[in-house]
Figure 1 (cartoon, rainbow, N blue to C red):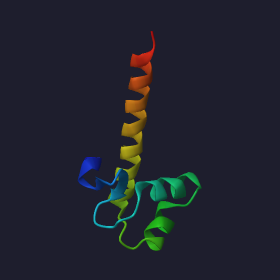
Figure 2: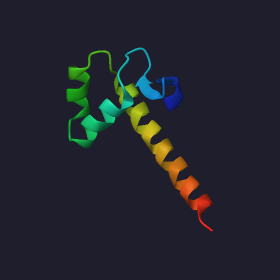
Figure 3: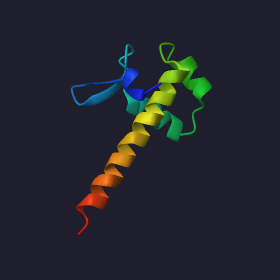
Figure 4: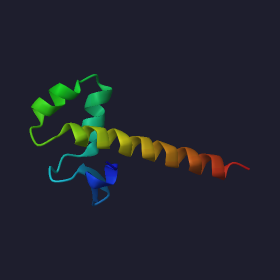
Length: 74
């Protein structure tokens, strides 16, 4: 599964497709130590696959940012 199947960009904000839930909310909760199980209970429309897609999305952004920084160095 590719993250693009479950993440959509709308108005410059990445959201979990079909839920309206911003990816940042999922990532912020995970970073704060909230378990995936708790997230799934708190957001009934969220799926385990969508949580993994949010992580993959963040990893992809980090890779792109690293490449841009590396390419910009003299």
